[in-house]
Length: 528
Image (cartoon, rainbow, N blue to C red):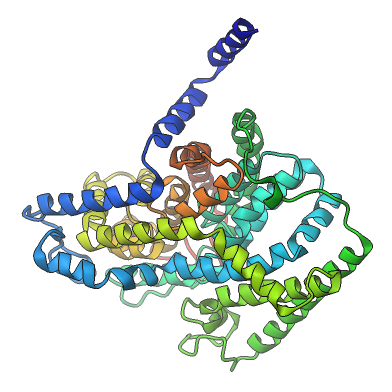
């Protein structure tokens, strides 16, 4: 029996593709790394030491925005260590993903533990063919970009729940959702706050060469809309043909009591679900009525145009309130479902659901503490900014043809994204180099920005420096307890590599055919 098993394993190993062996190596090597929380602590110490080593070196770079010399800051000086200790609490408390995750999870906890989400998933699975769960999930993940970072908290864990309830591997569902939320970050047919934010840096960079230039705030919306179809189709293939088959032998060993079950929805539960859903819809309609008038307090009062785009400004109160709104719109149906179904007998039941949700976040809070300190130190050191500038200047020095430079921008953006997570921070740094350079080659700022957004998206899902990366590891551990960084990276690497290749080719073909990037957008400079 043992000999037969060994032969079978040998045959499977022999038949594995080179790519499978590579992913297996990544997984094993990655999982040999320390616990993620300890890894961030070790990286923090490494950044301190590296900053001390590099700080005396003159790299000959100036910050493109301030004009000041860009040097590595020594974080091991007495002054820097004193600042580190003095600001440790605020660095952790002000760590952006922490508040987003905890506030949203309070609403998720009520909607989930009251049974409203479970009932909704059962109804969804009743009329959605199993084969179409993957594209549906990725599409939902892409649409979630409209709600800022809410997709990380809501859609990614939902991916695991949907797949597990459908009898599929839950980690494949998490991977597909993560790919849509983060790997396809720049693919969306609905405007969001990131669109005008990125454009603002493109515009400032373009004004270096042409002070009178004007750009449409949604200058890539046709391309990002078309890209959403691409990401859904490619992500569907990768999930069903590459990722899920590799997970076939990965045992789901999480707590079964906390996982969705497929019991039939009773008439009482069905009525409770629809009443809860109706209450949520009424709330959304009320929000729409509040936001629609031109003088609405939810619009950005400093926006140039009073049209609907003022709702999607990064500074618009509506965009700033996305996470609290998600909390409210999940709390309402959860409470209604709880009382109508009989799950709730008092308000204490709702609070208990919130408490149960927070109990599952304990490990994430520990990881977030060390992750916040590391990311803050890495940013303070200027090491990531220096790498970005050196890469941009090197690409500029090659003086390559426009099409090749566009590909170079995509690759460079993807690589730098492994070190500097913020899409706007990176673009603010390298846009003043790339945008004027390509304008002189006759390429419009609109096209240069589109190339950057492709590169900035595809490597999000393989870098532990992504602030939400530890959270996704926690979501995976609900189903497979020994999930580590290596497991997650090996799952997401096929998406990252294939997205980069296919999306780059797609942009080049889109450009070659001449399909508009958006209304009032151009491929050439000056505009014809």
